[in-house]
Image (cartoon, rainbow, N blue to C red; front, side):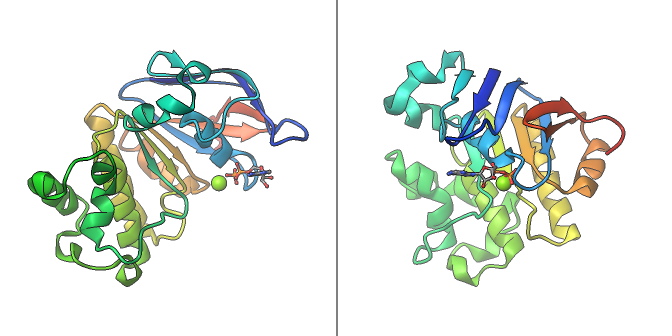
Length: 225
Ligand SMILES: Nc1ncnc2c1ncn2[C@@H]1O[C@H](COP(=O)(O)OP(=O)(O)O)[C@@H](O)[C@H]1O
Ligand SMILES: [Mg+2]
């Protein structure tokens, strides 16, 4: 569904990423590791057209990114759920409206989708927080809300950037369980993380492939995790 072919990327100077090939097929689960500054977030941004490859081709749902262009980004993004590293919310809007924002932006009303919204928020364990404002939520609640917002449009692919970055172990496991459930529904999942314990735990639950950025390139990580 998302495919990178011999992709390189540079912010202007030397290449940060070189010769990256990756295929996110339906139902696949990938982890992306590598030290801070290796280019994990950059690689995710290439996958959702926040950045365009300096060389090589990124293909989304069968169309090369350079053909989709700026005008087509919105339609592609509807099929890609993104959980950002710093999950930002509109602080003056209650949680329910924040999670429903992608629907609102695409012209659908929260009211018309209320049953689905309540089901979604129950799934992430936030039924009692519908009216809460984002600043009133804990880190774990914010991350689960960010995941709910990422899946509200029923995307085919979910890209998560350090989704458990600030969470304790119990909450990290809870988030992992949600990602595994989405994967079992056939969604392609790519999680950037440096939490190797999380990866070990996930491998007990799903057939996840672990990729690592090393010296600008993407490698398949072995048993040496
Ligand atoms: N907008 C930008 N302009 C220039 N350099 C950037 C930009 N964004 C990130 N970088 C640099 O690219 C490198 C990789 O960043 P990033 O993809 O965020 O790595 P990671 O997510 O693995 O920590 C870092 O050295 C970072 O400083
Ligand atoms: Mg990052």
